[in-house]
Image (cartoon, rainbow, N blue to C red; front, side, top):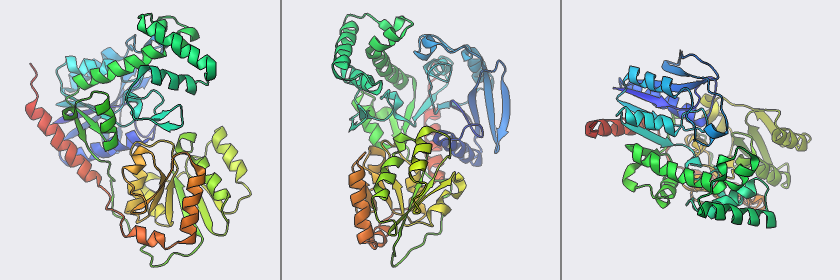
Length: 443
């Protein structure tokens, strides 16, 4: 059996959650004598190239399209589609598994349709929520948790807010845009900012139609978070088209420090990307208001020149209990976590953060925002704690309570569940592939 994994980038040039997930899954398949090949676009290059990364064969197909507005809006096929199709034909896989779809010249709906035309069974994994939310955060107007159901008028208002078009101007724009939508006058045909401004209802409607089209084309849609399956159901994706395969760790074994007593200061750790969406500013704000001798924060993440990073580093440069530690290798995360009392995940949004399971493997409780992806894994005051999303005051209150009663950490540690292994993730995928191939009818 040969499986081709399709995504936008791959290791080692681009390191992200999806890339690491695909790498681990490919290795699990290879251990079970299943050939796994990664196929990505060779962006800006007019030739196809290959390389091997940690035993995984990676094909970069020629994709030298000039990306324009029409291509980004999905109205124009990228030039590399023909080469993509030729490679699929030549490789003749038993199944193609799409892990990432990107607008413009990246792998997108056109590529999924091409595999379907070739009568090859295909699977799609939704690693991120962009299939139902243009913002990608499921936060209405950036603040309120959204149920994820696509509502064209509501989603249009949300996008205007993201573009800082608010108040009377935002209301009027929304009304005009919706009127144009109802009369089937599509401004996105205009290659201008005006077309974009009035065209949001059509862009959102296309997102909705694309989701249903993907649902039709795929044999199965894999979701890595059960809460997102509920979002997809609200958008009319049939339950029998979906399968939930929980995130897992490539190595779930780690020596955890089971303490019988916790002494101050409380050692808190943050590990992740340093962006506003990850909410690190909320944690820093909370820690700055607490006695420095009672709490200690280490921050692990890419040390970039980004304004967000530099501004918060500047605000904490004279703070002795907040330390910026730089990037930590993925293989060292569990060992690093085991040196602390508590992991904090203050994110504004999460799909299904793997770092929670890494903390569990290290025997570490988690304090996290109550966004969907965190709340699915953490039960408040049982195996960790939850605070109100985007609320530094509530986060400070939770930290104060732990400082006053540090042995709460000992009690919570007793309820930390075993981490899921990537071996299980691989086994679940192999069972899925086998079932689909056994039942697939090519005619």
